[in-house]
Structures are given as C-alpha cells and as structure tokens.
Length: 446
Ligand SMILES: Cc1ncc(COP(=O)(O)O)c(C=O)c1O
Image: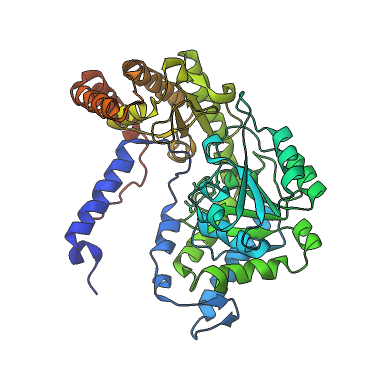
C-alpha cells in the first residue's frame, strides 16, 4: 500500500502547510489544543476501518472483539477520571452528544433552559437556528451587566416555565459555573440538570474547577478542548441521575444509537482512551494548573496595558476582552489584525452586546494550546503586550451600522492592514517565540 506522501501530494502539501501554521503561530482559540503524538497515532490507526453499530458485546456486526476492548477501556478510564456511574463514548462530537441528551430526556416541544449564545452559551443550548430550539422550546437565560451568570433570572424563568431540562455550561464565560446553585433550582422544579463541561473538562478532571458530578444528572463534554484528546464527545450519567431515573443510562445509550447515530468512530474511541490515560497522570494536573496560571498572567498583562476584561478577569482557561471602550463592533478588526500577527483568536459577543454576533465587540482567547507547548507566565506577559499593542493600532477604525458603509469601512481597514509594517514586525517576533517552543519535533508529512 502506498503511503500518504506518495499517494496524494496535493493533500500532503495542505496538511504540511497547516502543520507549519500551527508550529509558527500562537494558537489562542480557547476551544483548541494540541494532542499528543500518541493520540494522533491512535486516531489514524486501522480502527478507522471497522463498523461496530451497537455497544460493546452487543454489536450488529461481527469481528468486533478488539473494538469492544477499546470501548470498554475508554469507558473505564472516563469513569475513573470523572467519577461517574455510566459513560457513553460514542457521540461523534459535542453537538451530537447534546442532541442525544434532548432525545433521552425530552419530548419535542418540551421547554428547556440554557445560557443564551450571545451571553456565552453554546448553539446547542437553545440558540434559535439550532435543532435544539427548532424541536424543543428554548427559554434562554443571560448574564448580568457585570458579566456574571444571572442566577436570579435562572430561578425566575425556571419557576415560570417549569423546564424539563436545564443546561449549565459555557462556551464564552470566564468564571466558575455555580453547579450547586443550578442544582437547587433544577431540583425545585423537577428538571433534569445537565452540565456541558466541553470547555472545562480538563479543569474538572483535575480539580481546577469544581466538579458538577455531585450536583447534576448528566454531564456532556467534547474530548478535544482542555481534555486534549481527539475530536469527539461523551455523555456521562451520575449517581444522582440514576436516582432520579433508573433508566437514564439506557435512555442515553438508546438516544445515541440508534436514535441519532449509526456506527461509532472506533479510531476516535481508541484515541480518546489514550487521552484519558494521559489525563489520569499527575503531569496532566500540573499542565492544567499552568493553563489557569497562564490565563491569569495573560489577563493581568493585558489589563496593565489598559485592556478591559469581561468580569475583570478569569477563573478558568479563557479571557474575554471587552472592546466597547473603543466603540462597538471592533472584534473583526482585532481578530484579523492578530491573524496577520500570527496570533489566532476569535471575535465574540460581550455582555449587553451593542453590535451583532457577526460584528461583535469582543475577543475570546485562551491558554490551553500555548501551555501544551510549554509556555509559562513570562511568555503570557509578552503575548499580552502584543495583543494590547495590536488593539491600540486598530482601535480607531469604525464599524458603521449601515451595510454599504460597513463594507467600505472593512475594505479600507483590510487595505491598511496589508501595508502596516508594525504588525508584520510582530509576526516575526511571534514566529521567533513559537520557534522556541517546538510543537511536534521531527514531524513532517512531505
Ligand atoms: C459548551 C460547548 N458544548 C458543545 C460544543 C460543541 O462541540 P462540537 O463543536 O464538537 O460539536 C462546544 C463547542 O465549542 C461547546 O463549547
């Protein structure tokens, strides 16, 4: 059989260019990370060839004796790491995991609550275009003007709407999620409480964020963010969940297959098992502690240069920059300028967003990927300085409301960006820093 480098030069070149991009830039999207070579190897293994619809020891196809072993292993490791009663490792990713939770717990049209997308929630927690809101009745809750979750509103809405399900989970929120407070409210109205720990699963696994497990009925997560595994998802059922509904584990399994999916991605299951083993080692705890320390150092460095942070800082792995002191809708300018500088972040809405999700007024950024490279507080200080400097360079570009004016303003900005010398200098400084923290030494696809 022909190896990739001889079979398809076009694809090899694309992969190689992406590898070089990852090596030479600063990856600060808080939902991204760099897996180990071991995780990537398992993900690219012969397990990709197998069909295994069903669950371990109850498959619809033959030849699954080794797939059963790897799925059993992944489940055992997830149970040990998160201390839960039941785990389903088959969801293809975080969104299908969340959809399976609806299928397991709600009937179409049932009311549920989740954090509004623009306030830091996820699409699947009830945003209007998501299947969650199309098939079920979404009642969003929000953050207060100070950026913290509005728990009074959560209780008021729960008493008013009597939801079947309440999500507590975040995509763009930098503070601790108060699982115990959510549990009090969910228990008061008899709702299922589900923690979506996609972002913070690495923190939860190591105690850097309190665990939702004693408080909630179900937990969902992706495996590719702070947990540093392959792209995938998991659904966990807690002791409290089984006490509320002894059939909950069965309902979850049936919702995943045959409710929503066919054959699981066994190569991902194997890679997940590897990642979970890594997460059970003492050095993963050290890694996550450094992620949090780095995030705080980054926040302090930016704040010292006059950058405003939503809630004033962070308890977890991400920071949310509030650009509204410079005007509204400037997230796009900052994101594009930082991209040219080799610093990858994403534009994001801020609490009370005065613009729109397409032209938001904030920037979300985080430290999981940089910390995997070995960077520490000293590097965060330098990076925070670059970010503040780039914001200073672009802060006066306006973002008009009128569509035609806006198009013109963005074109003008991009032209300026092409010619700016300082941002290109920062790009070279970024390249030099990244070069001191090699990502996959010796790896090439050519
Ligand atoms: C809280 C949360 N839940 C679910 C997801 C969805 O995961 P995926 O993109 O793997 O479908 C995300 C992704 O960003 C997330 O942040």
